[in-house]
Length: 117
Image (cartoon, rainbow, N blue to C red):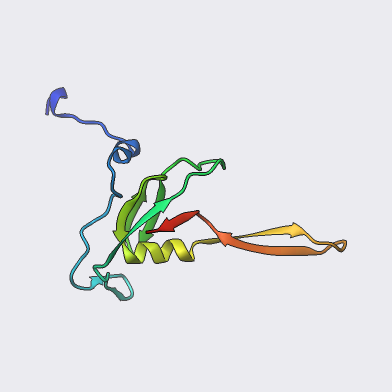
């Protein structure tokens, strides 16, 4: 193999495309290690919004039973409906001081801000 045959790519190369990196939706169930998982074949258009937080402009990586989806932020992309369900279920919990001494208030919010179109 010569130097002309070698191509170096990085994760940033995938961000130049307008759609998320995704495998074709299987028509049949995909065998998992412990169970079968079937993707519905339905798709939705989503936009994962950017934020000023650390990493808030980087693509969001989600995985469903071994299939990875890298979703660029700020760009509407079409993804399997199951990816939208993963985004809806991705939540983070934070604790903040309450009104009383030693009291903490639990707050749960979506991990990523997104819109489904």
